[in-house]
Image 1 (tube, rainbow, N blue to C red):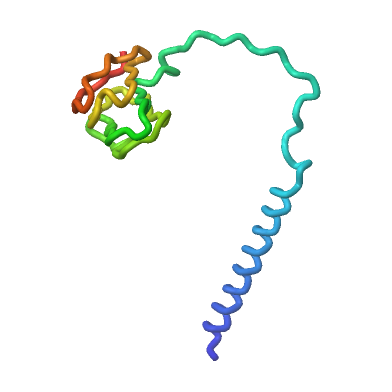
Image 2: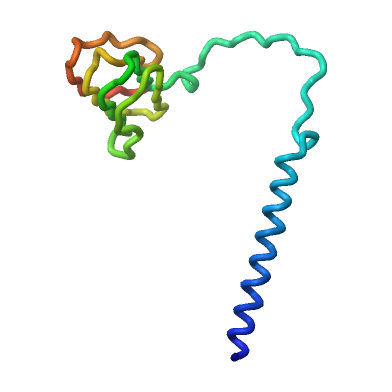
Length: 135
């Protein structure tokens, strides 16, 4: 066996040992109940809820209202696809991007909020396409 093969074998053993040590430390940390942050002993007063700022309101939010909602498509205008699938009851998708393209296979099956305001639903089975922009 050559010196290079011995060096590679030794390196492989060192990597394996390092992975075992890191895994064991992670497991011990996950199983240790005292490792987490301490909960306060007295409940703090509930903070007042500030009014939502424009940064906290999504440009578009889509919520499925039925047991099964046909395909919902959200895409950053000129960019990435955010969602392209069917949704289940109460499932939500939202985007804070400046401009979002929306396609709804059944506009009556979902609740759409644009900049915090509810968009009127379409007729059952009606397909809608529109683009929303941040105010």
